[in-house]
Amino acid sequence: NAGVTQTPKFRVLKTGQSMTLLCAQDMNHEYMYWYRQDPGMGLRLIHYSVGEGTTAKGEVPDGYNVSRLKKQNFLLGLESAAPSQTSVYFCASSQSAGGPGEQFFGPGTRLTVL
Amino acid sequence: AQSVTQPDIHITVSEGASLELRCNYSYGATPYLFWYVQSPGQGLQLLLKYFSGDTLVQGIKGFEAEFKRSQSSFNLRKPSVHWSDAAEYFCAVGARTNAGKSTFGDGTTLTVKP
Image 1 (cartoon, each protein chain N blue to C red):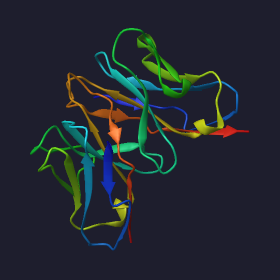
Image 2 (image 1 turned 135 degrees about the vertical axis):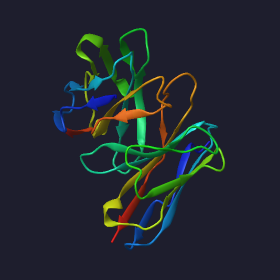
Image 3 (image 1 turned 30 degrees about the vertical axis):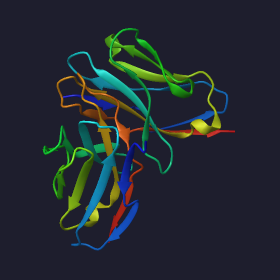
Image 4 (image 1 turned 45 degrees about the vertical axis):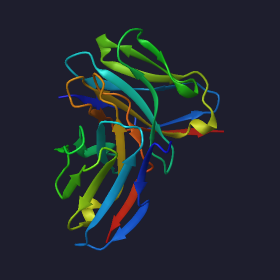
């Protein structure tokens, strides 16, 4: 049981390049989330999904797109990377039953945009 | 809208001393409250949670937290800190009707002196 895994762990991009971050969970959770973490700013929600085939915008969605074609996977895309997107990205998942449950986090992806 | 304030950005305590990390929340109804811990280079891990019932909740690693509705607080405590407790701590609040989402505070970094 791996929990939540993220690929890749580190990445360096040049401004304007694109990339996709992959999140996978093996706990059969309905809800999945993408956050970014910046110093002194805690965790900010980028996008989230309440089930396969659904996505919704979070607090800071601009510049990012997501897809959830399979229940266990949640992809975060950057179409044209900008230096402001340099951050640590965390994926999380939770079970939905009756209210906000504990979120299980992946180990993070450290992205640098030059 | 729900929000979380962690008034202390950084706290330093001596090993063996007691610890209290403050968390204040804003939410109209009964909140779902969480404390997470993040070790350097890692994702977040749940320490404890409060949904209802006994206002003093016990968590892992010897931590406890007390929900005080009148003060809108959910402070985290530990009677005797160990060097391995050095980490960043996040308080989070969720709502039953909010698609499972939680709002996180900006975090408190704990340093433990030998």
